[in-house]
Image (cartoon, rainbow, N blue to C red; front, side, top):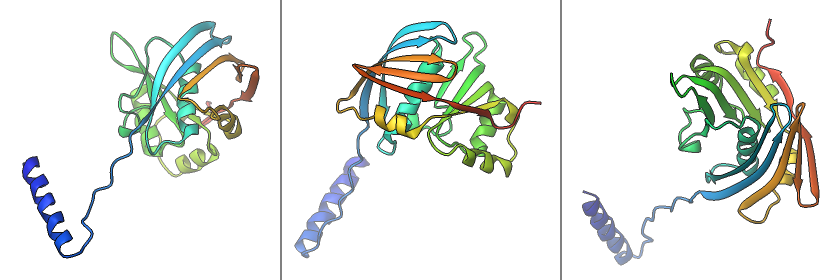
Length: 211
């Protein structure tokens, strides 16, 4: 069937050329870009010290701040069972990152990036024991959107807002490899890259204040 379609398309293009018309060409899909992250992690708050080495595919519709937020969310919640979504932005219904119990399969942690919809947060809260949002955008927009909708147990949904200027500076990397040391302590991030030191803090709050 595919071969027949290709033959018909080829025939139509030849006919268009014979009439002096420009044949219709399908735009080629842009490929994802693969980036490597090598992070020397020192999470003082959780007592975790690891050498992280992982790769992320940046979808054509994904911005650099979004991808970097994904990478930092992974590092700040690192555990051996924490996984990225297999299809990334290609699977909008799944968590950006998740941690499931190896025995029961139940989702213990669901992580979203950016400004997820109330509908997705409702689904995440029902499916997971804990939900976190890491965003570099205006987090107050998440609150305004969710005020109009019914979100399951909003008091267990934590929001972490990153400074977009911090991410912009971090993203000023010419190669496809990010290599740096990351220290996490009391909500502060310190990144050391060569002689360059970047500092930022999470603005942390809940979708609804716990009673």
